[in-house]
Length: 181
Image (tube, rainbow, N blue to C red):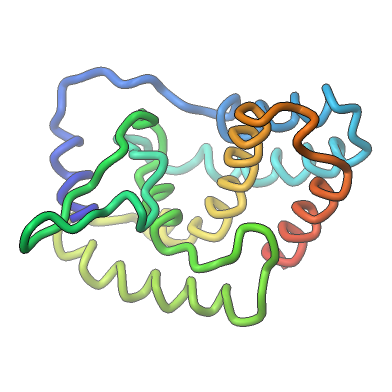
């Protein structure tokens, strides 16, 4: 279903907003700087490295929130919902988000391997309908890490600067370090 959505949207003539480094990395770094967090520099270094890889990826339609909760049962079939953040970005980002089996707050043993298994299973169906370049499938883990930057910015924007503290930043930095190692 996700491959069919990407394929259909590849032909769509509607111009969607383009999302780039400002959305995926810079917004969160700005929040860290506003909070005067000592972790800002560490996040900026990781974000720059992740972005250097992501910006090489093919762009096109991206749902931007393609997790399992946004695929609902309708009668005998399924339907994708929640298109409010759709944009022009990386279709591989949708693949990464959908296949991500990690706990957002605390990386647990076996979750990276579960994500790998889910990605393999997902690609068996997806690539029957729409191709992905090797660089896109190879980027999935980096895109999952980028999602942490994006989601953290959204959470803090929604709940306010006082909703997080240095402990939150430290735990997210630890998550990224463990996930990317």
